Length: 416
Image 1 (cartoon, rainbow, N blue to C red):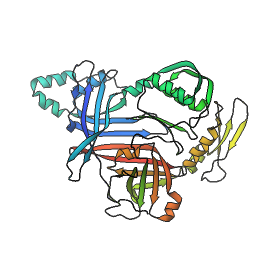
Image 2 (cartoon, rainbow, N blue to C red):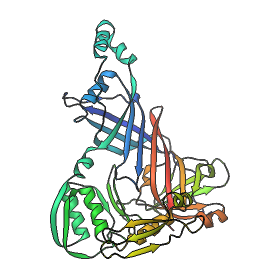
Image 3 (tube, one colour):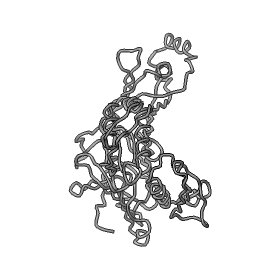
Image 4 (cartoon, helix red, strand yellow):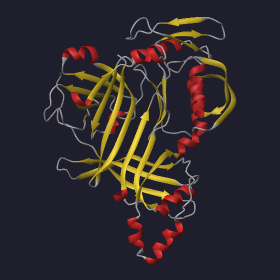
């Protein structure tokens, strides 16, 4: 184990404000911070293109049913901040983690059937007492309004004499999508004519990658995150970072339990542009899904090209019992890179690390970073140490006094 800091810094978070905007009211309804119990954020970078966010808060039935009735127009403003403290543990400054307008999607249409009883109680009893006694926990799923609207812009045009960078820029600009982090494309080809069918912006981006031999030498990660839209290389060949953003997060996995190795949190090495996070061995699990995957869907592929009628047989380099099972796929776009993408993705399933982290700086867990795992046990390090990519994160903010503590569960796949 090389020399790295052991004392971690615990990151704390605070709800600066949570407001509800109803179309029937001019002024927003401010939810008291004491009534907010939990915030959950899930980001699945392989299966989804948007984060799943919900907020758990206490409210009275009257407000709850107003939200239900106004579900097509209601808006929410959430501001979540990270608290930076100095050495004396006094508040230094706060940094926005979330500060945006959200909408919600709900299938609930149940009317306020007890409204008359609720109103009569407010008339005959102390109104404040009634309201306080009728608080119930409510969960609202939040979706960033700008991304949900802008990602649905429809294109139906033909672009001539352009490369994919030009075409993607055109799509993003005309959709009003801003704050984009896009890796430099390795596909530099110039296309004489590119048809953009009448599909959404998000579907157009996926279509372009499949139709025109990919954006990168690895599958592209397209994700509308809270603070930025990622269009990045999922491997290590082409990366992009914010200004002065650390480029690597190092996880040091300890063998024994002691005060330092059990310390939660993270530390930023400013000069090295790296985050370091100590991981206790009992907070980590290493799995392989290739044996199970082979039984369910098959690890090997027979790919049919409908344009030429030719077939390609791909034998994946994975751990499995026996020779493995084959499944048939159709390469409808005649993408020359599809075989390389499949082999890389299947090989990554052979080593997946799951972590439970406490009080970390969430900036250390962004998908554009390189993640390095270093094990104190050199024998283990030889087999499982190396470079990984983040495929999923689940962050739970739970109230702890005035602040919120964050617990993060993350999955990583070994790529090198």
